[in-house]
Image (cartoon, rainbow, N blue to C red; front, top):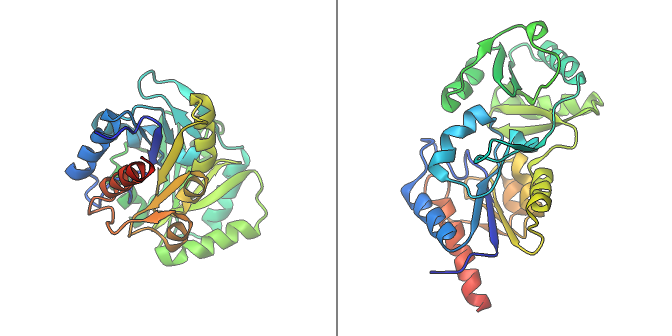
Length: 274
């Protein structure tokens, strides 16, 4: 068995570790288990909130804290402790109202630590809620508590995402971060929040400075994480900007055992070092 004891592997979920079915592939699960049995540290970094990610904690059994909310939360799945937690500035409400007025067809979901509020449902938002199996409450934006927002998720047709991103950038909104996070998803996150930033915080928390950090992702919200990692992996189905930033692009996509191929690649690298 290979010795992975100096390796940390942090993987995105949707489109990376999870195939279209949202059921982890057996070959990926076997590779993750082999990696952990060899002393490797495996965890996830996802845009999902706790309520949407916790269904995978018992399945994947990460042996380190997980990164959630696209980097605004580092959560210890064993103790339930929030090791790092950022929330949105109150200005996020004004930003959201402006986006709703500019894009009336846009779906809007506001995430709080204990509840998901669907402010405006559309076909894309319903698809997202169905895929993630999140219980939610329909409510007007003025009926939602003004503080403690984890993130705001906007849903709109894929071909309009760049328009939404450009509009947000043109408004000079400086109290939040905005990122395209999926084929029809755009997010408002706490200022200076990203998976890559959270990864750096996790490295500090766990004293992993001497470890080799591997990261895997497929979309724009994974970009900083891929760039920061010592070894960045992207599946064949990843966005071009992510592929360009990755150290290794696999032949497999998320439906074909991408994670297994990435772990095999790490193992080959270790053999060459020997």
